[in-house]
Structures are given as C-alpha cells and as structure tokens.
Image (cartoon, rainbow, N blue to C red):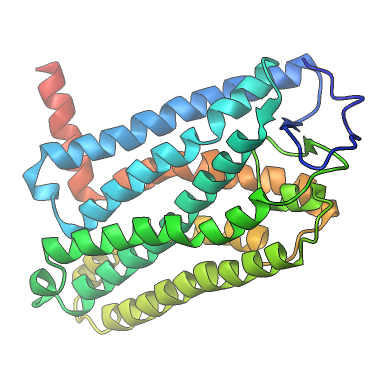
Length: 316
C-alpha cells in the first residue's frame, strides 16, 4: 500500500492530486473489502443488465413502468462504475492517488447521477399514481412520447443542477491537505480540505439538497398518499393486493434511497461525521444498486415470468 504519512500538509494554492484514504486497516481487511466490492459490482452489472435485456426482449414488458425501470437500471450501472472500480484499486493498494480533474469529474458524475435517480424515482411514483388512480385514462396520460420526455427531463436536469456546486468547488484552493477521508471524491470531503471561503459552496449545496431531495421526496410522498387512499377504496381484497403489488417494490427502493441520502446531504459538513459518511455511502454506492434488481424481480409477477421463460429457453 502507498504511504499516506508525510503528505497531509502542503503549502500549495491548488492541489494537483488527492489521496483517497479508503478504509485504513491491515491487509486482511483490504482483501475482504476487495472481495466484497468486486463481487457486489459484478452482481450489480449482471442484475441491471439482465433487467434491461428482459424488458427489451419481451414486448409485454415494454410499458411505462418498465421503461422507467430500464432507465433506473442503466443509471445504477454508471453510478457504481463512477466510483467502485477506483475504490477496488485503493483496496488492492495499486493507487490511492487521483488527479484533481479526475476527482472533480468523479464527484460531478456521481452527484449528477444521484440527482437523476431522485427525479426518476419521483417520476416512477407519479407513473404508479396515474396507473392506479386513473386506470382508464392511463394509456393516454402516460403515452410513450410523454415517457420519453419525462425520462429525458430527468437526465438533463440531473446533470445541469450539479454544475453550480461543481464549478464552485473546482475553483477552490486546497493548501493544507490533499488527503480525502473517503473511498471516492465527495463534496463534503473537498469542502473540509479547502482553505478558500466555502460559504457559497455550502449554501448552494444545502439549497440544492433541500430542493432536489426533499422536493422529489414530497412528490413521491404525495403520490403514494393518493395511491393508498385509492387502494383502500377498492372493494375486493384481491384488487387491493394487485394494486399494491404494482408499487410495493418501488416503495421499498424509495425508502432505502431517501433514508440514507437525506442523512448525508441535507445538513452542513462536519468533520466528526466524515467517517460515518463513508459507511452510509456504501448503502448508496453498492447496497441499493445491488438490491434494486432483486427487489423488482422477486416482487414482480411479470418480470418473474419473463425470467422463467428466459431460463426455459436457455435449458431447452
């Protein structure tokens, strides 16, 4: 492993590179982390690619719900790819260093994709609201054209809103330390290391966090309140169960994603929680992307049928 002693303090106006600390520990711990992250990364790629392939291969899955699910799976692939391979390299002891520009780009892509996920999850909640509350008009209200426009808006908005804090962070000076107490470049770590005035970065990050996270959470919450109020009025128990099953998987993913990210980003940065942030970030980086395919497949009758047909063809 590369030594990190002696590089904590530097008299420079702008860091040329940063050192990602990862999870300090003995070789056995690093090997264990390498195995866990590598195995999880392969499963994330396999599971999310499988969902996209299933939807594309089966016409009856090509509905708005699965269209947005494919977008979510595609996003999860790139979200984990933006930071997990570098984290694995750190655990292997190959390179803890990351150039300044690469660090800024990694932070930008991770947070842009994260914002896009908030928007996609709220759009998916809105889609379920229309499907359950307005079933007779659903095909008109959520046409293929509207689905495409909504997905495009999610992606563009996610990548645009993060340009403000990213551009501010890119112009900051890092004259005291270049060691990041994380396995990837994060906004809070870079703010803590900067010797510039970070008030504007903190303020813009907090405002965007409130608007994006709590705003999309509010849309999702309102959608599910209306969904539940509609479901409880369905006369038959079988009808209520069928209606709830169409949104239960999405609800589980929403709770997991929002629960961890609200803790991470809707607050000001403090050094005494940076260590905790690394562990919470694992939920967003590998746990949620790993569980998403399994949650949607195990709790979804159509996807399970598509998987069954795919395995039957494979072994026939």
